[in-house]
Amino acid sequence: MYPSSGTEASFPLFSIIPFIGILLSIALIPLVNHHFWESHYGKISLFWGLSFLLPVLFVFGFRFTAHNLAHTALLEYFPFIILLFALFTISGGIQIKGTLVGTPKLNSYLILLGTMLASLIGTTGAAMLLIRPIIRANKYRKHKVHIIVFFIFQFF
Image 1: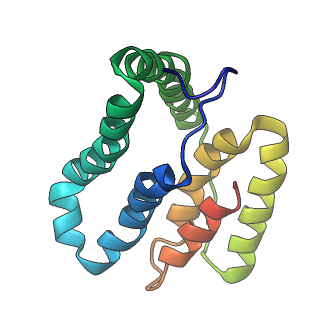
Image 2: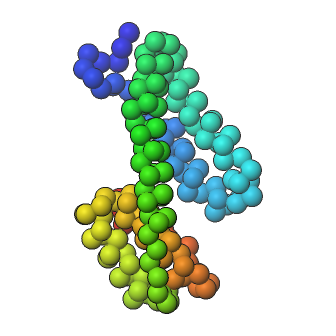
């Protein structure tokens, strides 16, 4: 019993709850209890993953679930991890030097540069290339978390 006759699975709307749950966990738990998150993020991620996988296994059966899990791991997850590794390795060899001081003007220019570079080398490549300079430039600022958040959001 497969969810649809096409290539896409048709899941009920409530099946997005684990996805929303893990996103909220990633966003809120470190803010509320940082030490708990550091110690238990793997267990929390496993909980949300199983809260989706087990109902799918129960409703659609082992064969469908195993096939789609393997498909996702082999054709989507591992290639993405390899891409990140390659981009991290390549961008690690590129060093942007200078006496950058983390002012609002400079941060805005770096975000603008990231937006333009994203058109040429992709969003992940631009983020990997510019994350180190923006962290280094803002190293001595007292309030800097929002800068990294805005930097990451520009690529979505």
